[in-house]
Amino acid sequence: MATDGTERKPLTHIPASEFGRELLRAEFTQRPNYANCNCGSYGHVPQRIIQAQNEFVKERELDPDNWYRFPEGEESKYFRAVRRLSEFLGTDKNNLVMVENVSTGVTTVLRSIKFAAGDKILINSHTFTAVEYSVEHLVKNTPGIEMVSFELQLPINKQVDLIDQFKRAIEGNPGIRVVVLDHITSSSAILTPVKPIIDWCHERDILVVLDGAHAAGQLPINLEEIGADYYLGNLHKWLFAPRGCSFIYVQPKHHDWTYPLVVAHNHFKDTLADRFLPSATRDNTPYLVVPECIDFHNSLGGLSVIYERNQALVTAAQEMLAAAWGTEVYPVTADCRAPFMGLVRIPKILEENLPVDLHSADLLMKALCDKGAFVVFSPSDGGMWARIAAHVWNSMEDYHMVRDLVLEMTQEVAAIKKINLSVEH
Figure (cartoon, rainbow, N blue to C red):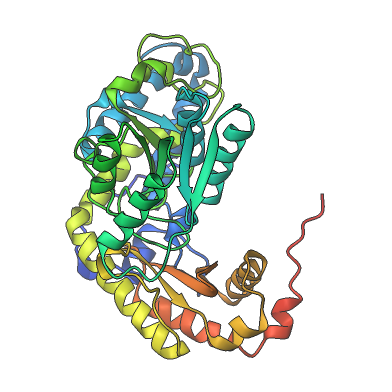
């Protein structure tokens, strides 16, 4: 029973033939005449998941003390969620803990690792900005350690080209202690062949922190087979979870020295799982509905069905947009492209009349959002690119809207330049 008194719809199998606008109307809510082609930032939460979350909120408010103080309250529901997630991700439940987002997870991990003078942390030019800042902050406050960033070179014509770039960066910088690696890069949607890089690093006693912010729900994941020392992942992007729902995987050999960022009542518990029990005053209900999110994912046919459909859609959309705009698809080999995301260069007139920088990207996003669609614009490799994403509620009509609205924007450069993005404090 939902908090508004309505019954949650029973969960039944939803065939791929109903993906797109039919599924959008049946399971999601969205502003009218809008094309949300950006699952890769904030996801989209199905109404049935919101209802399930609200049921937990109501149960909590009926008796907060019982909810927080005793095992039958939040604690049992939290461990239920971790168990289901561990099965989904291919690891033991004792290796997983829940955190608010990947940025929190990366900072948690970096502050748990013991560094010595002369140690270096390797990132690259496509590392997510918040992760880069976390490394930078650590380096500034830890005497003797260093951040090394290398420029990822395009085009990438085959997987080994990408692997070799990491190897050369490590070999050229003696003292690398930790490599921060993206499973899928955020702004450029590059799918990294992580397993050979991890194995190569481990042969040299280098730890690997794997940023999997875009992976869960988009890629098949078996954390034990991947073998990273630490793996951080979001569940709100591609697995339908409410925002503020992420995980840290910790290899068992690192359990003893991995601690939460915030010192609270459970901080000195013996096990990793107990140390990371959620804080009582934070809304932890996004964690608790993970089983419902996995059930919904499975009702759509599971990853094999979702993968085949979304990859075909995003590939077709990229080709259509590149042809309509007279531009190109991002220069990365097909087996290094994220299956549900892709980049297309924006029309030349926009690129020539706006600086290729983050501020211009924000202006373009605001202009497109006001017109009724959303994709991420980002500067990369000397150009400005539109990052599109495809999930089960999207259809080709969404990308036709993006195509037409961006072409309209080519006639409105002067107005775009005048958009005010400032907020009064």
